[in-house]
Length: 425
Image (cartoon, rainbow, N blue to C red; front, top):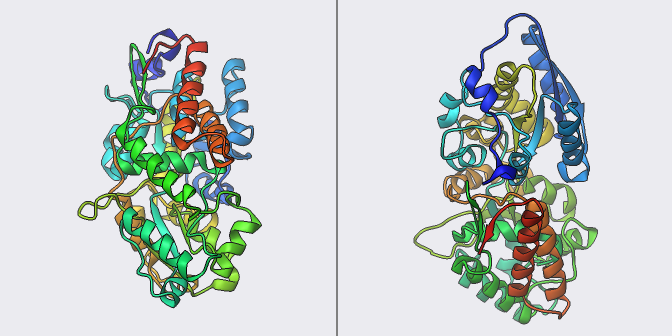
């Protein structure tokens, strides 16, 4: 993608990425609750590769900026938690090592859910991180509300629209869910589920097709209809007491979210325990169900790491070892990217809050239907900011959701051009 988009990692790959031997010290930045306990377990069993973890705020809360500053100053950690939608941004900075030649890395591809590997690698076989967790999407539903009003739980988006109308006809206070500007990454997950491919990167630059991809248009037209007909709440932001109240009192009886959302509902809608169920998210094609993905991270080896082979060994253990995965799920609520992790005992049990339903079976099935061809753009911070601003305007009567997509594309293009990247579309 030109000089500014040069791909990282040639030094490590060329050297063969061999284990150094002797005692090695590594540093690791991560924000998953309880991850320090997992690192303690690694250190107890691997005295020659000692990892010092620094628990940091979420990536967008200053950690990514601190990583970027560290890369420039030569003080970045050896390993860092990097979300899937930010991998391209760090590649743009030449900030990640290519660990494909490190022992065990390329051979581990089959251990992870298919779509995750396409997020951490490129078409030439370079690998920039090890998948950590994912957010395959499903729908959380207040089954009692649907039952009370005699409305079937929807399986398609058309049925979801009809259900929104039917519920509101029975109780005017009901908005089937909320749709707000705070959810630009959620909106991107909707594009992903529909089969959109809004970003394409190559050596010659970046092609943007947010405004021309028919699948993006399909999504915006659909939600515009629900907004215009006042079937969704547009003034209740996500992850707020107002949203949680709507869940608890049944006036907002669905939420489409990633697997991690099971704890969000459980912990914030305590009065409605036992009334929720989890079902596949609505599909565009009833004969071919698909899910989007919202959230998830990787363990990346940052550029300049003195011991990339050992760093890769730790990253592989962290994200494939059964005991490590169980701890991460129990302490941090992670839903693993490793295929074997999807069958861990903790994810095979019924969950009391959801009436004993084995909810993770739904997410496991969803994970297998996430489109592996979707890739994020190289400057998603700009994309999300443009989309969020555009959504805010659209939901306040100053434009449409299509206008919001245009703002997202313009913001993305402007950011890339400032970096000297060729942009088409």
